[in-house]
Image (cartoon, rainbow, N blue to C red; front, side, top):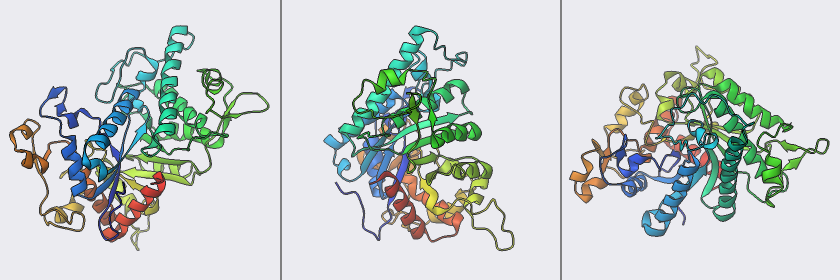
Length: 426
């Protein structure tokens, strides 16, 4: 399948689509409101020139479900021939309890809300064995998909830290889970490993200092003297595909990112100071992912804006186009009429067809979740559901960035497309 459109056509690559979210099965807040409509969502992607999608994994359970859905689409529906579907595997910081607390079954849409679990007791043999088993399960899933599905498995993630949502998972567990997952990526891609060194899809929310500190540890390299989960014994010595680096002096595992390691900090909502700290990590292939949630912040719009001739502040134009990837993070992070970014969109959204959506005569209608099943099949194809976001809004995200940077839309669209294809090697 070749999903690359003609050069003279808009083309979008959404790096953040939460395809396994229950809303695409018609479930909102645990209640069934309408029939599953994922195929219509994907067809709207094609109609709006979203030709490539990276679908994100937030837990082991959701990562497996994501893989299952993609296989089903590719095997049963022609839309799989028109849109390139890729996926990530990883455990989101808000789902960290899945890996360390027995029977938590924590997922993004089902938080465990157990903030009393404020430490990890590795001295408890049963607890340690459970944690080891979960990380081995994650390691094996990543390893197997690298071997069996390199065409679609394109990134490890979504992993990182989220200090805004400790009711999902507390700080200590988040940092532990983040670091152990980074170790797994090194075990699968360092030394003489036959595996491809996949990019990282990273989550950073109100945690920049700790986030940077942990990444720096892997950028500089370190000997893992503690090896808290006995990775050297339970993974390195038992997996022939694991050719991790062993420190000759100590005989212990040595972890270090490949200098060409690719990272994207998705859904960036930080400050100019945070952005500088990320770029100061001295890793060449570090990118920033932006979506509607990022662009609702005037400060981030300013980071994109060219410096005024009379007021060249350091807070302007410090996020260059060649370091940006774009996403919708659907079903979340839509651009709303209350956001400052909407002012950059409104002229276009009242004039169809336009440079972002040349095949549409008007934008899709939108109804409440209990309404779609009352529509005809043809009506459902062109009807979105409130307040759910969809990847078909990618053109809006690109348009806001082009307006904020005061650059031609086509120039920004082409640059972002190329950035993203290069980043994921597709």
